[in-house]
Image (cartoon, rainbow, N blue to C red; front, side):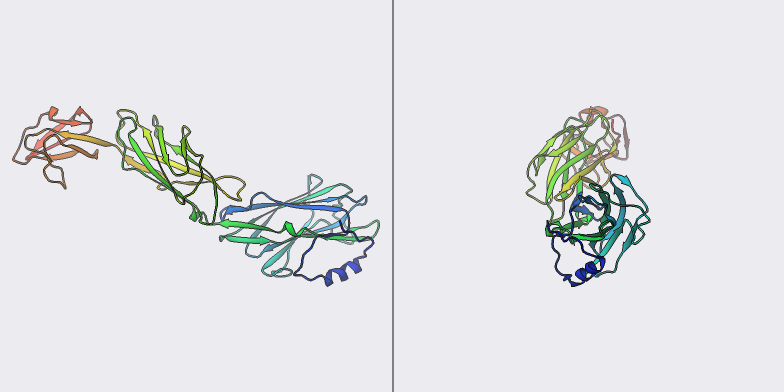
Length: 373
């Protein structure tokens, strides 16, 4: 580590004035370690990235007037979170924003000043082997990749009248990516369900930003009472995990297409709904986030096998006459069957719904209608 003992504040000012602003290099006048960490480097535009900066004073003297600077792209929003001195939260410090382009083009400097010279009345000295933690958040209203440049610090060793300062390592520069959550889409569709085992197939898709890497995906289901997830198939090697679908394979396609079937209790009837949440994590994200499958919820109706036995044939609205004994796969609103000739008497046993006799039969002007059982 480079050191330059005994630099006065005047000499420090002259030295800083000679530094070319386009070049940032690793340098420290004193034995001070510093580190910057990001909880994630990829986040939706609706979320944020948390940045934690730590400085430790390894000198035997107290470090006074600590001045920490971050250079953040001006299009990002910075929110100050906390400052801790040796683990204890402090509030009597100065947080200020500089002018756009002060040091880096299209970047704004943000400064945390623990003490202001020359009085240092805030009494936030960084004692020997003590440490300072600064936490802030950055967010973006628009998607894109943004570069956070290296950080810098300055201070003063009052007892020895030494000015102190330093810059981070070049490798500490970090890019963060914000993506538009609208570019993540989950959807599901189903024609209807049958009140029998494996009575419904739901087709699903999940799409994500083309420049992103999908690391994990869990499809969390909310099914009607008594329904159970049965089989799954499709991209990404989906597996049945009870109330959710886990993807254990590689994500080679975008969007992913997959489907699942459900066991429906016998006797289920009417309108019901299914909901799902796609829990996913992209490369650079610390934690998973979720988006609802659309439509939310998915409304589906029961389907029935209708068999009408009539020597005259059958017909339903919008179709021609249907041959004797034909199975009609339709939704469950009351049906109307018109015979090919005039009024025809059809017995209850002549109309079956899912193999059961229809409950109500009415006849009027050559039409026969029934209700679901």
